[in-house]
Image (cartoon, rainbow, N blue to C red):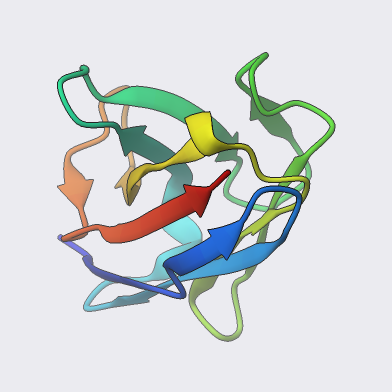
Length: 117
């Protein structure tokens, strides 16, 4: 198991930017593919972005494509989510997650992102 801790959330105006970080500990970080998910009030948790173990492959939800960028630094055992051109509908609790197999079974506690209009 790997332990995950998100940071970097906060309140930002529409059009602004935030950078989320997720620090991992407890297991070789490079063994894990990583992803960001989010959950808005009254909605189900949804996929935001994912990155492969090496960082060479990324994927994004259509709703964030072109605005968000996922990256990782295996030496620092950290995954990032750069969020630009934020919209009120991006307001949610953002979670990072890791997997060694087909299932994301390691989750952080989440960080709140609030975008005001």
